[in-house]
Amino acid sequence: MEHKGILVVVSGFAGAGKGTLMKNLIDTYDEYALSVSATSRQPRKGEVEGEHYFFKTREEFEEMIKNGELLEHAQYVGNYYGTPRAFVEEKLREGLDVILEIEVQGALQVKKLFPNSVLIFVMPPSAAELEKRLSGRGTETEEVINKRMHRAIVESAGIEKYNYVVINDDVKTCTEVLHGMIQAAKLTPKRQATFIKEVREDLRKMVKDIDD
Ligand code: 5GP
Image (cartoon, rainbow, N blue to C red; front, side):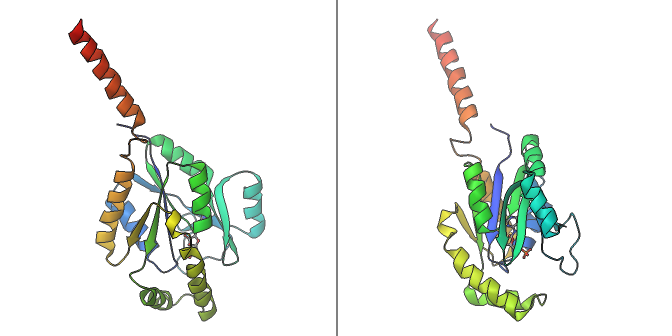
């Protein structure tokens, strides 16, 4: 069986509950590494440098782009967001599955770079539930909430480019479903090509031995 890690891209509208879901996935299973993004947006209350994000000025972020330190990057609601390349490459080499929680433009860049990556889109159970969750968070102004609802409409146009959709109504169930999707994605014939080749070759050798 192939043991090299798979790159998992998780997107979803702001307020779909991705953050909680990712945390639960990482806490439940030990084969996943969660990438920490860089961003030029201001930290929210309770956010920790290096844990939730690497917080950068716009100038520092642009320097990272210039130096090729980011695997992908995009602008979202006026701020830069990007995935530091080194961590992802290191963890994949170690055989861990790396999770990127990023928005649609970045996800599609990753799909181009890593065609074997698996793209999963987290949906809320309904539009009304999404609005409720966005308002309930209490950390954003009405203007930002409205911008994110509008952005959700725009992003929903990209959903068909993803491999799977998962509906986040119950975190525990959703975590199990997500884990199942990732494991299934690792077992496609394309990803198991080396293993399949090995078994075929061994079989041929064995049959030849019998013929001799
Ligand atoms: P927030 O500001 O709410 O933490 O994140 C806003 C959006 O940026 C979310 O959709 C989140 O998934 C996305 N995002 C976070 N990190 C990255 C990243 O490294 N690259 C890209 N393209 N999007 C990101």
